[in-house]
Length: 427
Image (cartoon, rainbow, N blue to C red; front, side):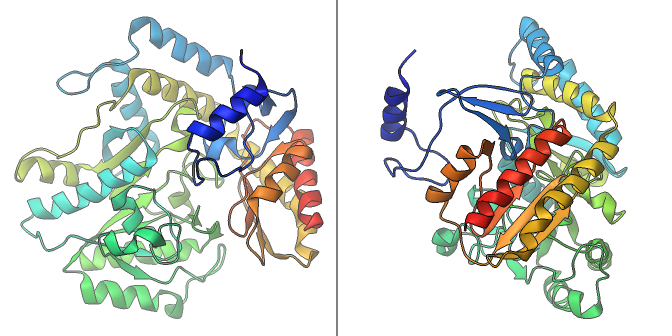
């Protein structure tokens, strides 16, 4: 095994990391192993994970049940093309997803990542209207401060002017935006709150294929929690004006907000639903786009009679088998009680930050804890402070936030929140 210095030097010289630059001297920490909620670095330091590997590892790391599912599937086949062939893990997983998602969703298209799942949803919506002989309905309507991925289609609906992708704004498809909802979670949505959206969909519905939203929680665009009533009214307006509704549950799906899917807070169903991240318990990349039978059959009966998308690693058997095991683990556990307990401990643990001069707001929903600061964070100097405190937290922009694995113990969560409060106080 190469020395730690050698690994760091090679990494800095050759490896690109997310939202960073080669040879930029950002702090990078080689990992030796991970088990439960503990990340062990190559230098021996142990960190309590507050990020669930970007919100995906809900069962923690190295879980014996998920390990066994992957090992068992490996004995049969690690991968097989999905064009013209099928396999039981994909069929079983699709059936399970249809069973646990809102009732109108009956068909499942598997893909490799969340960004691709959203690209698929956008293409489905446009091809649906093409099949209905309404090809001019090809725009997407969404709210500002959203985030749906880093590919070109998803960037176009991820607030290219105010979000992370402003550099590419002149080259992206021009979509329709309204201000993000100002009505907060557990608050009603007034006529004033919905007025801009109502005006936009009324004016442009003949050109709009679909509305796309992150339900209840706007994730990487700002970690905002908004009114379930707002989402209800969006559903009603889509119905009124003949526009599809796409919900991006890649970050919020599988219990993170206290509901199995965040749209359940509003008791509404989308026409198309995107899931990913926690689908496999963070073991490997897999995502899915679910659609109603009406959408699927309309695309089948239109020209060219097939949906024009097909990833090489679509429905990878290893990923599907692991996802099935992950869903079984979740659904057979008292996950609602678990997430509620995490919510209460996050509220108790992070609330002291509310009185700090550097902090604008503390907000908690389910297993999501957010500290919004007044000023943007210098991650280069702040990241090492969290590591020195024995926790893994990856802040961005003005946000320090936690999305811990569901298996985290009360003591581990108290240690995590105490470390975060201490570091934020140092600002």
